[in-house]
Length: 149
Image (cartoon, rainbow, N blue to C red; front, side, top):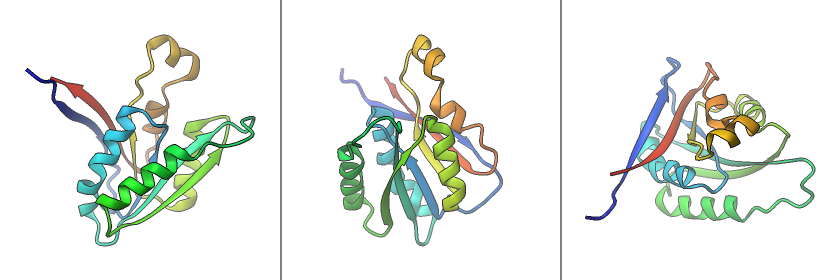
């Protein structure tokens, strides 16, 4: 029997019925990829969807590697031709703070993010980024995780 992927999601609905401006933080993990795969279906909630893909880099990292970000935008453009898709690279020591600050500045209606696959020890050291982002109460937040069956 083959393994099938079933997405599991957690929606934090803030009462706003707008889903026009989407912010998608990515780092290249499988749950972020799954979030990108679900995005075309989710953007049917909008007449003119705008999608911003973002990646956060540490300020000490001199040169930013944008391959993951650019490749995700190219792939998404193939499946979501009716949306305006753009990318942004952010620099910050705090990924959740950078994502939430940009979401506020950009006027994002919803943030969709892949759940962390980091282990308990790694999360204790670095923090659980999707959990920290999902604490935002003024945006619709969708956290996506892959389930194997």
